[in-house]
Image (cartoon, rainbow, N blue to C red; front, side):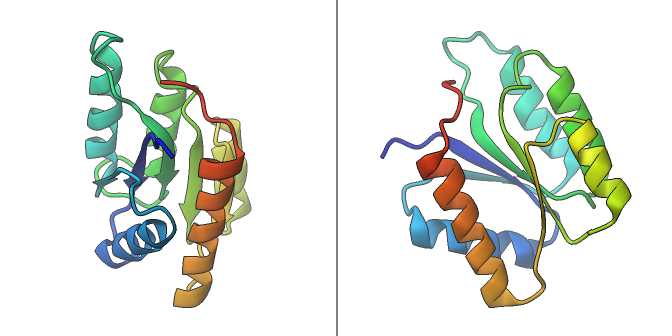
Length: 144
């Protein structure tokens, strides 16, 4: 299978490593880019959007944490969805927060899905595997 890149925006190195490991178990050839803060994530995505279309390589899917340093996840989501070149890239919020306001704000700003991250290691791996199965195997992603 020819995969588009996946962008993981996660500041916690342990959570990022667990997600990457779970994704690689199911999809070993999946190109994964990790951004540890909101500013780096925006720089990656928006700088790529500004390059000529022939040389642009955008992620096909974004996994986004909300509680990020520098620029929080809701701000990243808002800027991402406001940009004409990046708004069609699906964003899955994967957060430890189950606050109604975070969920509502995420959807209001254009999130394609909101998942509360389990604290249990096995449950977290299972969630990542289910996400990968759906978004990378069943769902039709926009062609980049």
